[in-house]
Length: 442
Image 1 (cartoon, rainbow, N blue to C red):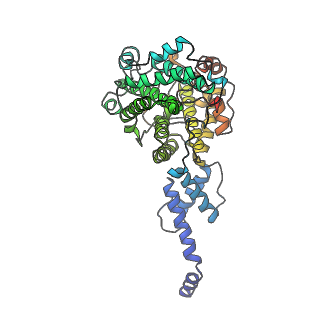
Image 2 (cartoon, one colour; image 1 turned 30 degrees about the vertical axis):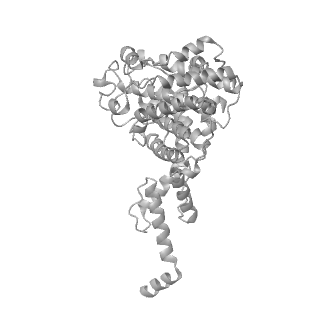
Image 3 (tube, helix red, strand yellow; image 1 turned 135 degrees about the vertical axis):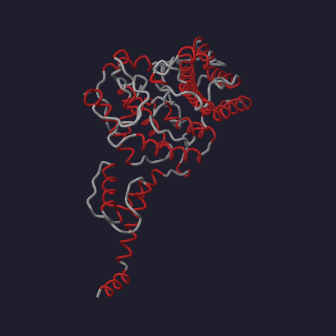
């Protein structure tokens, strides 16, 4: 009798179809990183648990019924992680298709000599010597390079949007002179920094941090590329050749080594270099590079941001945990905005994590003690201690996190008076140089 039923099921296709559906489901769950058991077409507890975890990760529930809709959900989510070049559309100006007047950019202008002088000070500047003399693992004094690059972006933006040809010419000249001098190229590169002692050596916050020298040089160069994108169509042939040569040279030292470079902990400047790679891809019109970068970074963000919204490393920096959590969240939201603007779709699992991370940012504002209850398991070398080092507010350089949070996650930032007071100083810069654009101007 069993043989007859088996033949009957085989003929009408029910049993093989069910097995194929289960096998497909198991394969998709495995590709998405869930432990669904062996890919054998047998529906067991591991497969069901993996489905429950999948839907929970998206803020949904699994009804216990596996069918074609569930398979489609899995396929669509996997497709969101597996970004392809044909999805990419470069908007032209990095964060927008057209620069428009924006009061949030401030009033910087190359009609003012002090702005020209400020940007000129970056030409050939010895960041290596500055950093060695003035900075350590806990504190980075970077104004000598970050202020000039923000002046360049602010004044260039305002020149273009007001059609001020004199200032556009000044901007193009400064951009070219920075390139001709190979500015910042003598800063330590990625390969060399990997040979140096790590930051917080022996737990000492005042120990040298070579990585910061590299990171800030990379960040300033990344913002330089944004200005280059804006000015690209105004450069003369020679100016373009000089700028393009410099960008390629800097990219080779500071960014190519971190293409698809796994970072186990933390989400920091320019999305650990991810936004920098995207800016370069836009400059080169390289859709394949952009797609590979977004594909890689989505998976990195998915790994580093926990299901409950806490961020591996950022959210566990001791007395500065709130500060660094909001710092990392701001950058992750900025990356998400650019990725979606360029034509990709944010994976639901990642979007739900960003939603939860936004809730955690608010929890840190409203209930510090509850925020701090979350335990971290593992090594945390850069945990900051001491009452004198305490910072308990949203990061002031995340000048428009209150714009990005509701835009990407629908969560409004809670009132944080100390943050609002301290960010006023940085809002005058007109640019969030941690992400390369001002979300108030999108």
